[in-house]
Amino acid sequence: MRTRLKWLSLVLAVIFVIILVLKAGDLLTSKTLTPKVLIITMFQNPPDASPGEARTWLEQDKLDYKLEIPGSFSPVYYNRQKDQALVITGMGKANATATLMALGLSDKLDLRKTYFIVAGIAGTPPKKATIGTVAWAQWVVDTDLAHEIDLRLLPQGWQYPYFHLGASQPWAPGWTTGTEVYQLNPKLQDIAYQLTRNLQLADSLKAQEYRKLYPYPAAQQAPKVVKGDSVTSDTYWHGTLFSDWATWWVQKFTNGQGSYYMTAMEDNAILTALHRLAAAGKIDADRIMVLRAAANFDQTYPLGSDVVSLNADTGGYLIAVHNAYLVGSTMVKHIISHWSEFK
Image 1: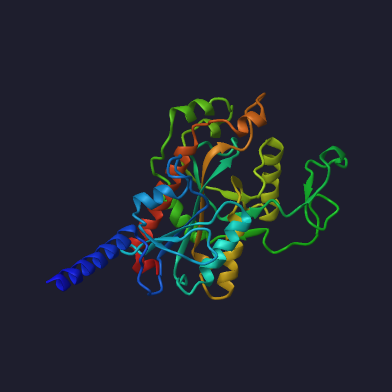
Image 2: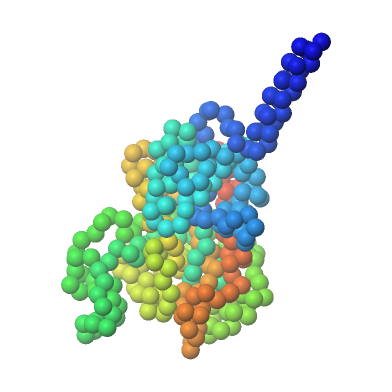
């Protein structure tokens, strides 16, 4: 009798452990995962702080299962019923590149038919958009890869201290690294924009009051979904000079086709990793989307202080996090529910 009770206790203990592991979401089948959509976020705040870019996705889309990938900043969070996944890259170019390469080269994932959506927050120029606005990008342009000279010693006629690599003029034939500019699939961008352009985006009273400091029609309007391109820099710059330069830089690198709307710290790094993986046959580069939601303006208001506005509570952070999810998840649901068309 004692032996039976002992074995029964042991069996119950094993069952209890299995239930705990399953409930924690840490056990996935050994089968290679083939997500239909992979959301790429850049940071997540601690549980007791304001939500980062990832938390709303994890909670609302029930991405309960975790798959550890060696070399990745975070696990891959997964919903097995939807075949939907999310990763947190870590902030900045180095983290972003390393994480995406780790995922793409892992034998635990098959990403050849996966759609990728970069969904993060950003800054925006007040003459183009407002706090809470979400932009789908077609062009992603790096602003770190440039020559720089002392701003106090600018040659006559020069507007900016940054100029084309290998050139002796602001824009002249020089050399490139091959990662300065990426064009995303314009047809996919248009599908995403048309699907989400009429969404009612979140706003806040604080953001509405803060907008009034900026005497530009675009800055004072309610947030909306637009088509607009992003620039990437590891430096979190702020100010009119930088904003005007970024506008000029995007125009030059895209031959006048692009329009700077959103700042970012990771997008070119993510695109570089994904394009390397595409060249290796690991992913399809035509299935990449980038959206950024404005949490702040990229410069101060007239007669204001850039130092003050850089750290100002604009009322835009939480609405940007929410709107990035609202817009991005609308596209995710559309892809999954119309998989026969998108696969």
